[in-house]
Length: 64
Image (cartoon, rainbow, N blue to C red; front, side, top):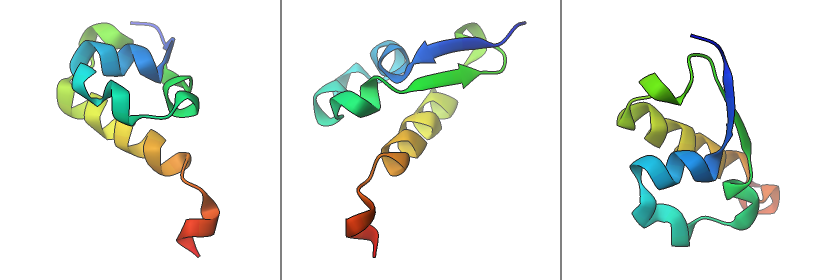
């Protein structure tokens, strides 16, 4: 399997579409590189990617 680059929105729409309204546009537009592609991505892995993306986009001012 080859690496595949997808938007976070593709992952959200496939496994957790109910989360779509709660994510910001910049989070949804994040590019995610999947080592083995979306074909074998599990829902638990997808949720972990979504959570990590949310953390990456948090405003650092709130974390101080």
